[in-house]
Structures are given as structure tokens and as C-alpha cells.
Image 1 (cartoon, one colour):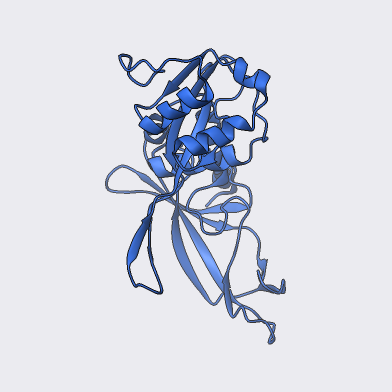
Image 2: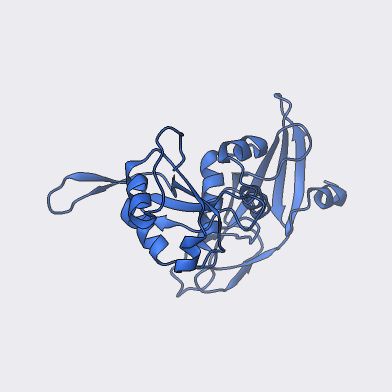
Length: 257
């Protein structure tokens, strides 16, 4: 491909090898890394030349134009040349597409900014052609990196979210199975004109988990709350009556206390 195609695609460290139109009207873009040498992730020895093999991985990236864009990363695998290294084979890596992920960093940055605009995850997912789970993962990681002390808020929202899919675990003694629900409670700022939207994350979705988070705030911070909006959840309602006795839970208004 002409260098102009790589410049237009504008993914740092990558070049466009091929761009074709598929039968359904979508465009397929094949990319490879520019670097010809790559370090072993275990010992750091640089390896180049002919790779051990090449594999293709489909990557979620920013939309470009009106038609769907299918991005394929042609990854090279290398054999480590250090005899004492236990990493026999490794795949080339990129800071723009982190190991273990199928989405580019520039897409994740855009999703994080969209989440900061207090938009529904489903709407963001449809706009960028990604799954709800990816938008949720980006938002959860961004919330985990926020400062511990949130800014003062007048309108506080309380809702739960899943940070990942449920997992099944087996007890090694009894042999019975139990399901782990990775729920997190997310306090949010409902006044979109002031401050950040997500104030933090706290494990679980019980009244205790919310009370623990709220008790960590200063008294002046709690007294500044004027409105609390919650899910129709008994645990959250108990939290309101326990931690904010001045509030009355009004069940006639959906999702609001």
C-alpha cells in the first residue's frame, strides 16, 4: 500500500498492508507493526528477521467513514533466542493495542470521554459499533483510577454495575459449585453541569457497601447532598434511611428517593 494510506489510518507504530472492500460493503484493513525487532517479554532479548509464524487478530477500532471498518492485525510470533529463557515463543506487542485486548487504545480513550458525558452505555456501544461490555470495562477502569476523594455533589445517584461476567468456582473440599457475581456499586454525580460523572466504585451492591463508601466522606460532603436517586432496590433504600435520615424514600417516583 502507499504510505499515504498508513498516514490516513493514523495508528502509531502500524502500517496498512492491504485495504479491500468486502461483499457486504464493509472495508477490510490489514495492518502490521513497523518495528522489525521485538523484545522477549520475559528476558528482553531482541529478536527480528523471519518470524516463527504469523497470526491474524480482529481489532475493534474507531469508525472511519460511513461504512463498517474491519481491522485485522497480522501478528508475528517469534522464538526467543536466549537458551536459558523459559519463554520459548512470544507475540509482538504494541502500546496502542495492549496484550490480551481486542480494542485499540484510541478507541478506549474515545469511549472514556463519551462515558464522562453521562450517556447510556448502550447508546455509546451502538454509536461506535462495540459491545456494552467493552464500554462498561472502559468506564470501570476509568473509575478505579479516579482520586479517592470525590468533589462535592448536590444530586447523588446510586446504581450497580458488573465489572465482568459471572464466574463459577468449585469448592476443592466439598466439590460443590458456587457462582461469583462481580457486582460493584457506582456513586454518580447527576448534575452533569458540574464535576465528574462517576464518583467512584465500591465492591458489592448492599447497603453496607454503600454506607462504607459514604462514611469515608466528610460530614460537610454528606450534608451538601440535596437529592438521591437510586434503583428500586431494598438495600439502597436501607442505606438512604440509615446514612441520610433526613431523606424520605418516595416509592411513588421510579428510581428516586
